[in-house]
Length: 225
Image 1 (cartoon, rainbow, N blue to C red):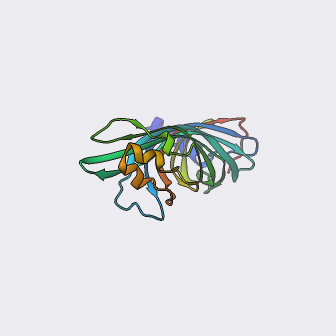
Image 2: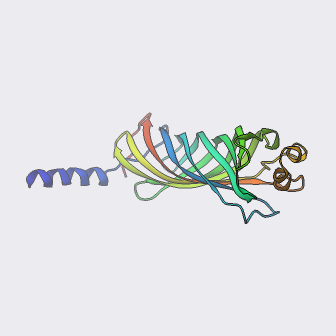
Image 3: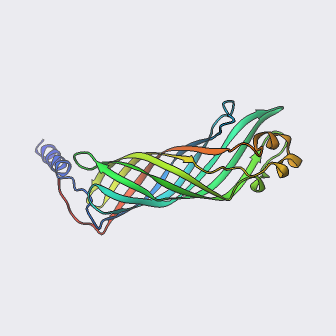
């Protein structure tokens, strides 16, 4: 019983004296999660379904104070859509490597909540389409190689010890530039590409993910609440 009380007391003490990151701290966090994506456009894609995929990457936070940091990193993200075309469903998959450059604000009594926002730069790695009539058709000629997006998200940090924490986060990215190029090439390969990638329509990606990360604190400077 005494051991249980002692362990409980130590745990409570650690929680109460949880340390926050201060100026000069660097945090590196591998990230893995589940993502969903769809197209958005003024033309309208209400009949399209989102695609579900996994996402991996690494977050990097450089702290300017205990309240603010610069959030960057690299993330492998799968965007695209799914739609019905007789005789079945067609899935378009656009693979990107995304570099966010976000302001990250840390809040809460122990600064264990954060909200980040800013530009995200996505570089196309691969673009494929798959349906009942064909498998993994390359559509890179139909997709722009670069995407500028606006990203934002919210996260919660569970401190494990002075140098390590578990992170839970939701991230979102909205494409600001069009994902599609022009439809001439698409028309000769598949009629439905011409329908979905017509010249006058700006197709943009809409991407969200729920993720978990393991946060490692480097350049540690103690700053107790």
